[in-house]
Image (tube, rainbow, N blue to C red; front, side, top):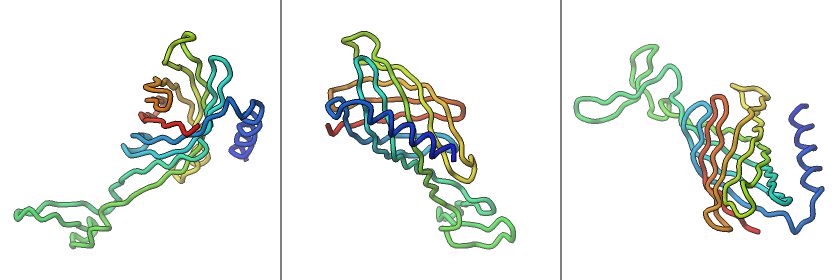
Length: 171
């Protein structure tokens, strides 16, 4: 229920400003909450003077994970096999690797440092709804640098949380 309340607040805040101050975009980069992985997301920005409010309404974080009970081994002939740790038998390689996808949403507010600066600093929260974290809100600090008017590099850091990525604006 908390997540729905926060999402409704985000949507109402985004609608408070005119369409001319709004930009759409996508992000891609590296993320680390449980393990290092990749990130792909879509966002909408609302600008007001030196402030930027970003709602990343859809973020997919992809992680590789070693499943418990199995391990990869390299044999003397350089072949790699998957072994079941409970009985020592060889098993299908697909048992030794797993891809996890965490779907999240986040909201952050940043302020431009100086009127002509390309640097923004702020903070935000990411909402997770996966099995390990439950329905969690992760606060973070954010900083970004506008490489061009259409491309930015951005970083987020919080407790057990790090992301570095490129953002592309669609206007």
